[in-house]
Image 1 (cartoon, rainbow, N blue to C red):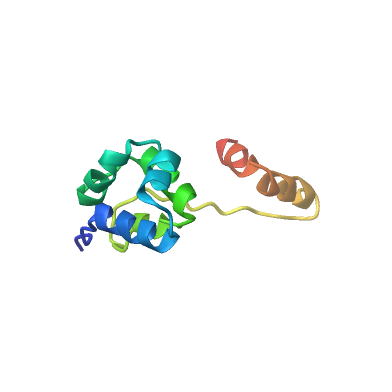
Image 2 (image 1 turned 90 degrees about the vertical axis):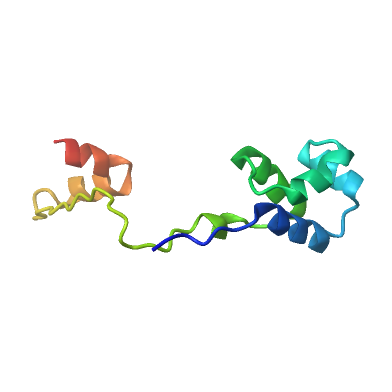
Length: 107
C-alpha cells in the first residue's frame, strides 16, 4: 500500500490560519523571515525541526502526519518468551519495568 502524499505547506497554512496569529508573529515564533512565510505555505516539504517549531507556535499536533498505514511493512520482530516462577518473578518484574527488557533479552 502506497502512502498518500500530503502537502505539508497547506497543512501548516491551515494550522497558522486556525492559530489567529499575524504572519509577523508566526514568522518570529517559527524562526523565519516574515517574507518567507508564504514560501513555507507553498512548500511540499519541511524539516522535522521546523515542524516542531511550527507545532509549538501554533499549538498543533502534527504527529498524525507520521502514521504508517501499511501493516505489510517488513520490519524485523523479536518475540520473547519469559518463564516466570516464584524465584525469579521479582527480578523479571524489575527488568521489565525499567529499561531492563533490553538487558533481559541480551542475557
